Length: 458
Image (cartoon, rainbow, N blue to C red; front, side):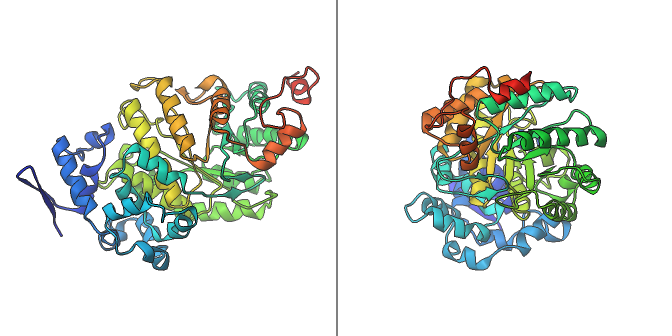
């Protein structure tokens, strides 16, 4: 099948649906690096016109990454729910965009539709959307998950407390955790990126967090963001594992570059659930993704990076995660060059993830060699909060001293809460109020010298 349209007296022809998708994408450096981007603004518009007239069903008939070559494609196809797809099965991509923005697309209808959509459908419609469209449609999508507290309820935004330390120093990590808790952060997860891959060190970090959560009876969960194989070994050794972490991508080959298979993820899901450490639910997986990961691994199959990112969400949702995090600006300017591209990508990722039924959070971030600054992050944070983002990061001073990138701070979360009246997970909100860290309105209360958390800081 060939895809063509006439624009300005010129006939534009695209050989495959994958080419249409790539050239309809908003410009970004990663697609340019891969040689996939439209050669001009006119070609981009022509591709969008073709895409708008393409039936959604085309994505069931023409697989962008061949079924026989990729287990991610097989997962997506084999789990596709034709009954859930039926309400939009007759629509083109352009008509689907209009429907998503209409009053017919309610929170309930979008929830029932999620299993009927393939990631490619979500990516396709996002390419036709302006920022306000991505925000409005995403704001109607709600995905609720549970472990020791409830994430994703309407009117809430959670925060991952990220207390990384360049030497995994227990005192430094403890100080950052207590600092974040005193700022009301940590309801999504207390999650450490370890500097070491030593199982002994990672086990110590898990026991450190487990001890703090138990001592103060904090209704949250912990995670050390190490490889899934390491976590499985630690579970075998009896370590107190709450959530299993893994970076994932949108192709089998890209996941192989991470040293992970779908079977390993299934094994980890079963192992973590067998521990029965959750109190209000059993969503035990935590995934991170990022546009450009497949290209950086040479595993993109000629597919644009945003479509592959949506396919990563197709992987994530199969394992019923508590949290999925797009680390949007972390890979670097080779894939998202500047603040404008990072902002656009963050809104796309959040919309696609939520539409597909994932509890999507965003690490609003950039690397120091990108053409971006904290004003860009303020913009993206504010837009995502209005769109109903599930969670964001809480990093001391917004500057991660171990990973060496810029993210969002404990104070940034307070700003968004005050601006939009967003609450924390209800169990965590009640805990903060019980310890008088916050007042009845959820705002930080004045610090008291004898407070238990301050005493723990020593």
